[in-house]
Length: 186
Image (cartoon, rainbow, N blue to C red; front, side, top):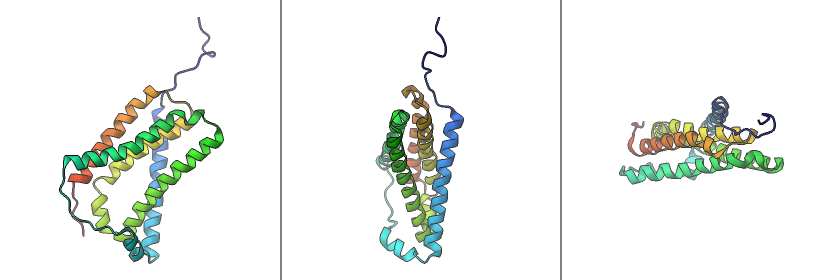
């Protein structure tokens, strides 16, 4: 008979903790994007940002290869976050802080880029990203939520199956929407 206090419990993912982490990460991304958009728009920087980004909004021929390519690119990023989540609770606290800073910087940099584009291009970019951005944000926020959970407590690899599959499905949908769904622009 084993004593319950002497063996290690296999760690799963508490869904409420993943959802809370995902919501916090999504909220931070939306806030940074909105603040950046407002700064660009109302700070008189729209012309400079348009020059820097140089988006052409050229039409493309939708294809399955394009949709899969977009989804695969995004999934590689999410998969890296899932893999880091597996071991982040086991590393030295200073290394954990460094990883936190790196992932946060990448997350907020992408949010700021989307916000800058929104502030610079307005309705034109909003129409281009409206179909896929919410779905991709949900998928990437799920990966971020798993990371937040993983930094607090060890995660067993088998616990990543459901969130990884959910993320892949969302990113597949996002790639399809980005390729095939069009919202008429202004």
